[in-house]
Length: 265
Length: 251
Image (cartoon, rainbow over all chains, first blue to last red; front, side, top):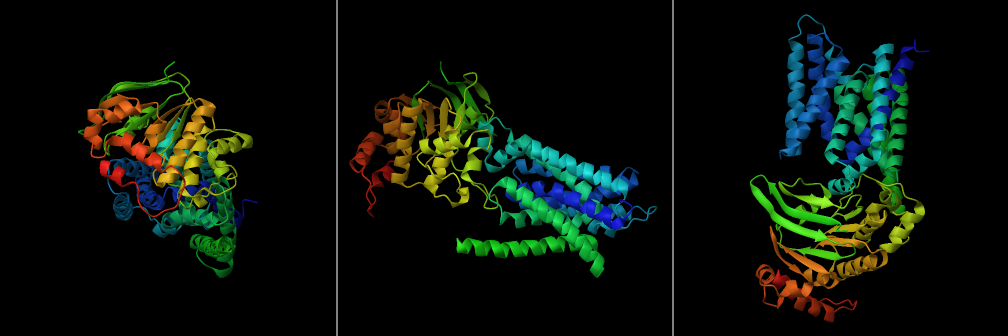
């Protein structure tokens, strides 16, 4: 069954969607959308470094994404304005990454594949990495769910409940780095943030509890992967962007439905 | 046994000493109110007690196994986060639906269980926060300016609820407020804070203490007079004249 590239691609897309859904909810709730961007852009630098030192691309991207996420967290605690900080780090990481790639004269590297993903080229090994990473992220978020939720609502409330919000933030950061590293192959660096945010934002219109929002986001993400891949096949469009387009359409539809529902109430 | 003991507490942010040599105790069942001007370190003191701020000097000792119910100053729930009152009450503790309902009852807002937090009024929201703090039968309730954003009659009603809670559950209460005239009537003990403990005692003692008057003014006879003044008008009525003028002047 895994011999068919379309089936491998679909499974890869679903894997990323499942990990991105609960994480994406926290990214939306905590207003850290650009945090996802910054981490993802840094991953390009990770790709360049791992090609230079001939280590696995997953490991390189993970390490640099993690360092980026930690740097942002530490600098923001020192009182830098978050949006300026993210704007500076995110785009400079991308620029440094692109420059670093150009030094790799010996290796031919298809940069487009990392910027926009190449889901149709997913191998069995990639699939194992994606599903392994996704399972790890879902397990991590599931394990810390209430603590993360409490820390997201109010830091003092968390402290009073014997929860350390800084530790929870670190767990979220770690999960984000893993997701970015895993998703590079599927949707690419430029569209990872979309897969995090759009399904969660679409789910907001239907959900009444945090848990239902995460589940609906997972369903929307997985459905977008399946429909997007099929559409890409039929219309001969790039696969990663098509998946994001489908998710964006769902978001637009649900937003219209949601606002109409609000008026009826 | 004493629930909370604070000894020689100092908190410093950078070069800025917010609290120095602060000592206080909270005994079972008593209502202690901390009053003080803006920037006097009231919130830092509460944060040090719950462990959100690390003291730079002294120490905070909690009775072993002390259950704290904490009502934050204000809690902003991002509109992107859907959450029902019931789910919010169950945030950190496994509690039954019956416990949720009775906590809401105790906080004076039954029937909100299925509502979205984002649809609540300011007064309802504060009471849901109170219900969440009450749900695990705390030994002590900590309230950080819990009535910010409520109007005068709303906050007076909130503090009456606090007194009822104390009567019914016997839990101790440590609260911060700037609404002296409303709070003082309900307190057993008042601690006047301005970086250090200026004075401390029953509401009447503190209101007549020179340190307190130096901080809050004497023009209108201090907070006790304000409280009495407020008491004269302590019936629920709608009117458009402002009888908080003397309170404003005193601040």
